[in-house]
Image (tube, rainbow, N blue to C red; front, side):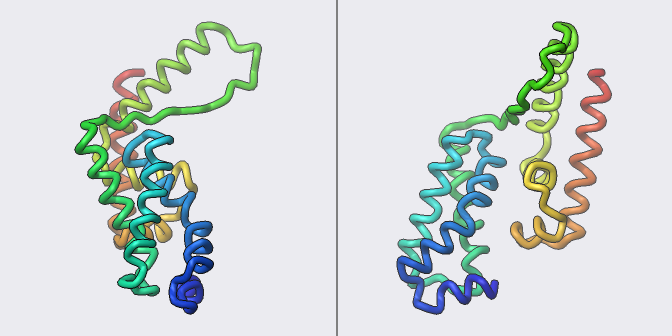
Length: 174
């Protein structure tokens, strides 16, 4: 919060906005990606999110600028999902480094990835967002709570539920 306050001391001019953009673009893009599962869409919506912040810069309180940014990002993602009626899919872009893998191993790994993607897609949006923010962005529960405006206990509960459901679904198929 203090960082945003310092950035906006000049009145949220172009330079302060550029700094705000540079500081938060990647995390907003990732946040939107977790909700939409589309990289290109997440970049577009993140840019649109910052455009909306710029357009409303006169009304934004520096103390709550980051929270406002996340609210705009969430609303844009939800609107996009409603319009497209898309389903969440998690894409594992793991690079193969071992050329000595057997075809059976590659097939089993592909099947497991599909099971994992489906299991993640079956989580509620709240559980999925917390799970991916923790496992992909390596954010702590406290950081997730701050970004989503939740208590740490709420984040812990969502993560516990997500892990339980993932364990149950994947164990059934193995």
